[in-house]
Length: 604
Image 1 (spheres, rainbow, N blue to C red):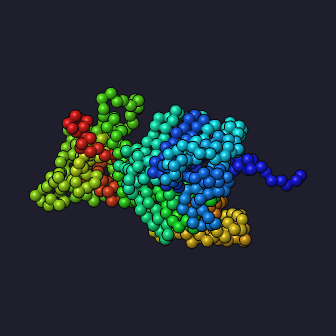
Image 2: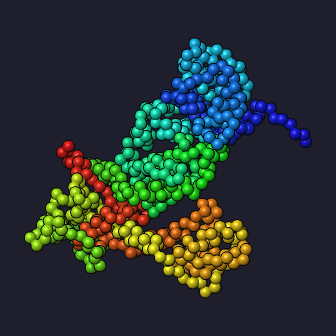
Image 3: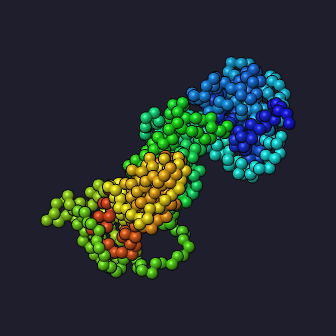
C-alpha cells in the first residue's frame, strides 16, 4: 500500500460531505456569502426542493474575473488573513463554492459596481469551464442545478421535495431574523413566495414577520450582560409555547447557530413553567469578543464552543428567569383567541363526561380550611336560583374606602375582584378593562410550590441517615469533580465523602426524596457535573418532589370558596412570580378584554 495524493475533485467531494449535507446547506452557505458581500436585497429561488435548482441573487459588492477564478478553489477567501481569533464574517473557510461545484452544476455570474461588464464561471462535477465575460447586474447570481448528480449515493439520502424545501425555508427565516436590515425574497416552482421586507431598526418587526403577529404581544424583552458577554432578544411568556423547538432561534455575533448549550439553557430557564412535551418560543442573540468563542468547530458552522460555557449558560438562564419573574405571569393572547372562538356560533367541542362531584355554578357548600384571607375586600354573598354570585363591593360606614374599594378602583389589581365561582373550580374576576377566569387548583398549586421552593433556598434541607453508607464506584476524575460540589450537595441534604481514590460514600440522602437509589442518584450527578460543572440535578429532583407535594397540598377542584378566599388567592397570585402557570406548565388563568366581549355581541 502506497501513500498518494488524492485528486482535487475527490478532495472537494469529501469536503462536500461535511459542508453540503443537503440543499439547505448549500443555500445557507450562498446566503452567507451574499450577506458578507454587503447585500441589502437577497432573492432565493428553488425548484424541486432545491434538488434541481437553487438560485441566489444579491446586490452586494460583486466579484471581478480574477476573484471568480480563485473563488472556486478550496481555501480561497477574502474574509480572513492569518488568524482564526477575530472572525467577524459568516463565511471564512473558503470551502463552500468548490464543495458545491464538485457535486453539482454551479454557475456564478458577477459584476462589481462601476465596471462595464460582468464575468461568469461554471463548474460541473468539479471541472471548471474557465472565466468568461458575461452581461450582469451589479452584484452576484449563483445558480446550483442538479445537486449531488456527481455523487448519486448522497442523492438517495435526501428527503422529499417538500421536506427539503421546508429546510431551505428555515434557513431563510433564521437569516432574516439575524439581519433585519436586509430584504429576503424566497420563491420558486415548489413553493409560494415568501417576502421579508427590510424591517428597519426594530428587530421585533422582523421577528413578527417570521414568527407571526402574535409573538410581539406575547414576548418579553431580554437585555442582560455578564462580564464580556451581552445577551439580547425576546422570549415568549410561558403560556405561549409550541410543539417543537423549531421556534427557538439563537445567534452568536450575528451568526445563526443551533448550539446544544444554548438550547439546553433555554429549556432549563423554563423548567416547571411549560407543559411536558411543549417548547418555549425564543429569539436570543449573544455578543462577545470573537476570541472568546470558537466558530470553527464544524465546517457547517452551526455549532460553537465558548471559552467559558458556564458563564454563557448562567447568563441565559438567569436573564430569562429574571424576565419571567418580571413579566412572565401575563396570560398568552392565544388563550383569549381560543376563548373567542369557543364563544362563536357554531363552535362545538367533542362531548365529554362531566366530573361526578361537580354541579353547575357551585350549588352546594363543602367544609374546608379557608385560605389566609389577606384581603381588604368586603363582599356580601347572595345565592339566587342555585347560583354563586358575588355582589359589587361597596364601602360601609364602619370602614374606609381604602379597605373596601369602589368598583372603579378595581384597576389597581392586575387580576381584579372575584365575582363568581363556576363549577366549583373556576373563579371569575372583574378587572378594570375586562375579566379573568382562574383555575383555582392550578393557581394554588403554583403558590404552594413556590413556598416549598423558598424552603429549598433556606437552611440545609432535612436529610435521612443511611444505616449502612452506600459506596458508589466512579472513575477517580469524576470523584474529584463531584467532591468539589460536596458543600452544595450537603445543603440539599445529600452527605457524601471520599472513600478511597475511586469511590464515593453516601451517608445521608434528602428526606424529601424518601427511599431513593443513592447509587443511581450519585451517578446521575457525576454525569451532570462532568458535562456542565454544576450539580443542579439533585435540586431538580427535589423541585420535582416539591411540585408533586404542591399538587396534593393545594386547593382541590370541586371545593367551594368564600369570596374572601377567592380574593386572597387573586392577591397572592399577583405577588407570586410564575403564578401565570401551574407546576406542570398549564395556564392558571385566561384574560378576556372588554373590547373582546363587546365584539362577541357585535357592539364594536
